[in-house]
Image 1 (cartoon, helix red, strand yellow):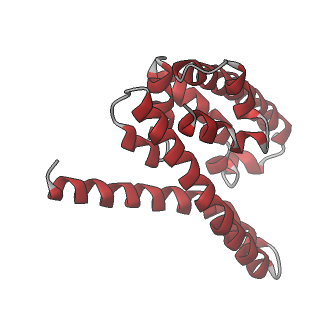
Image 2 (cartoon, rainbow, N blue to C red):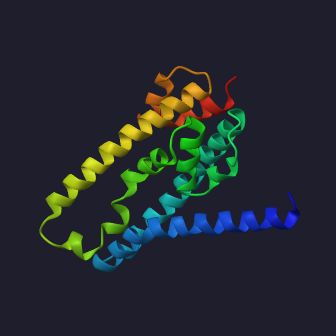
Length: 179
């Protein structure tokens, strides 16, 4: 690959990653504007977000890229692009691309928190809708990670562990760097 194309791809990845971080910070900025003294609290949350989210994301992206390489899945660099990494999960699992996008459902509520539809008195309807979307997303995430475990010739229950809090930190590393 030419050096110019590689540099262009790196710039594109950094731009998309920064865009994703700014979209995730939107609720904190709104919180800071509505609550007296909220700026200090928002700054603390932003610091925590940066301190923990970036290493977590780098770990998952690196592990996903290694899994893609070991399963001979093309476009392993997609592991570094937000949302596109979910498409890569589906490709590794040999499932339709839509399955990867259905894993995104648990994040569907983030841009809607400050919308006018959220501000009315029907919040219980929204919570029910987001709850159902999250459950469907969790099921597809489970199925995709079970298939990724099988693609790495590991037992499918390793895929089940990918949705268990804290243990989920072990799963991508084990699937990526084990024999």
